[in-house]
Image (cartoon, rainbow over all chains, first blue to last red):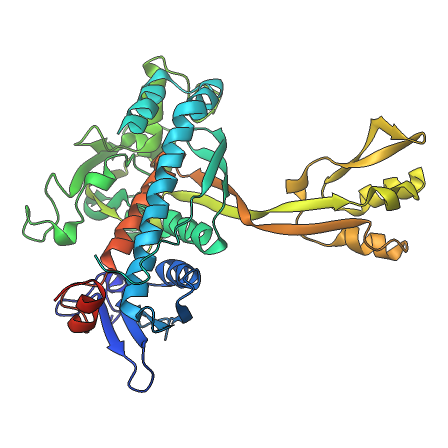
Length: 136
Length: 334
């Protein structure tokens, strides 16, 4: 009866920012990013990517409550960097990694995947799709 | 741009597709970590969009099942969703005034079955659904169509007449079911009926090392009991490869290992600790992907990557976010 709409889990309410940023009042180069309507999917890859950055002294995320659809990412960096910079860099790197991964899949299905598909008796339409997908 | 530490820490994952069928894929993913593998798995299950029946207007229902029961069953029928990535979500479609029933965000279905003068029970199946858009239809209808065109059955169901559709309800003589249904784009996070994944799993690739020197001290019986101590068939005796007339114990199928530690415990029990060492390669994963048929396994993987990139793009800091001065200074701005 009074159940919240299901889409509230992944649609950012109007007037709310997807990402908000708050600097730590006591520590320099430390900040918390509140990301609305995200969960472990983004939180964990972001955290692990931040750990690859040697300028990041601390990176962690939490899902404060299962019914509050947001995550809080906390970053502490050296003076060589800043939380915003590390955050942006992590997203850029992840994006590039995924782009590379996508190309790896396309390349593989072009080189050998189609041959694999052929053996698995897939109709010709699929082969054409596969080649088209690789050319894109 | 002056970026003090703007160096990239990007990884370059490697991929090897072992098997690719329409609704099944098995591939290796290397040179990345568990967070990425798990993010891909989570996205495949809950965030790759498909089309499913979402709104049902029942005109006549004299069947034994009530209206909402039938509506629920209709929702669970997988529909071909190759076009779902290009479709709009009804909630942010401006072509229709929020009622979600235009060509950009929805597909209409009709179903009308009347059990007339038959003594047998009439089965209403997904084959009775009539779609208004040829791109979107129940998956087994699409499969039958492809079969009729002379193509091989992509799902490997070899029995040619096995396409009986998905049962919705059974009708007795005189009973009737007539309805209009609207299928919409959605994601598994909203409702599991929109999930294109039947199973998506990944495992760490095991690295199994046998200490050959210690192995040589074992009798044939001891070797056989070691092989049999593993509940899955991980090891075997290689009779072609003999040292001092004893067959060597070799790894037959490393991936059959379920990280149960049974062989290691057995080795310790017979007083030979270190006989077998097994570690998980923490940057190598073996994925198994199975779809419901709504999209192909290859599409599921590619769409998952696209969706994850869109999600990452959405969580970027906007210009008006946070402390502009600091960000600007670091990006070399004024």
